[in-house]
Amino acid sequence: MNTTCKAAVWSGPQKIEIQNIRMPECMDDGLIIKLEAASICGTDLHLFRQAPPSPLILGHEMCGRIVEMGKNAARAMRCYTGNIKVGDRICLYPWVVCGTCSNCLTYGIGACGICENAFVYGVPFEELGVGGIPVRSNAVDEAPYLKGGFAEYMYVFPGTFMWQVPEEMPSNVASLLDPMAVAMRSVELAIRAPGIFEDSFNLGSTVLVIGDGQVAALTAMIARALGVQNIIISGFSEQKLALAQKLSKADAVMNSAKMPIKERKEIIAGFNHGKGADVVFQCAGSPQAFRDGIDLLKNVGTLIETGNIVGKSTVEFDPARDLCSKHATYIGMSVNTAGAFNKAFQMLCKFKQFGFGDIFTHRCTLDSLLETMMKGGDPDYMKGWVDFDHE
Image (cartoon, rainbow, N blue to C red; front, top):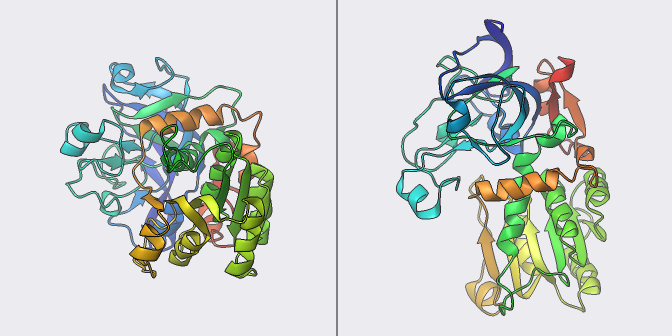
């Protein structure tokens, strides 16, 4: 193995530098993977526009092949699909949780977003907002150096949840595990116990997905796979709405930039016996989209808020009108679980049935990663990925 490898290092606001980084020593309980694909997450697009706490490698959605393992690594990893070995292709749950803090003990090992001592591949601890103290650094100048997916190789720490990827599954599809799991967890949160009065997500439901990005498209795909009767997607980009509808087989799309909310209400009512949506999955990073979701939700409906995970904006909310009188359920989604990731992996294994690969609108190499990330706000951009086979 080479003594160095190429990596895209986030070193400043909108600054990604290609550097040769020292290859790490593989410890007894760790392993090293050679990357085959790394997807660009919306979090990456948000983070790289600011200054990093220290130069580091972004990227937490990846698929790679194991090229080196420590003697205790097989026992140290948490693999859902069997015993790992050199040569296996794997995809990862990007959070490594401690398993010993009060939240891990309360909510179970694998619940991300609340572990007080968590590490995330490709995301600095300072951006996690979980309190506690960092147990590992993402800094590229601290061993084991390669701790993000935008590099030719990556080090994998003990305690990482992972899945062995079938050889026939395309690498870019495998790298969709994280956004698929976000969508999967959002859908999980909408599901209620059988027969409960507030059950609104079922085979007869009319579901509204707000947002035309990757998570919105995947959420609609899962809802369709579960047999939901009516699916409507609302967004701003004609190109992305068309792609989201193609991917999910949604029954209708609505351009909220061109269509007033009264007209959107009428379209939804046409699908749901004159009522609003039974379930709203709000996947857009816009406070106004949350407000629209409230107005488009029927009485005794459920709204899952997934999109507004960053930022500090406010909207009008009347507890009497929007909560009590509506008897609505509002659930915020940020904490995910390894179990939801496992369900997401099972969904990805149906790649021959679903056109997951069509979600990628931009492909790049490490050398052209910055150029692609700068296009993240374009109306035709759904998702980009790094193709290491063409490095």
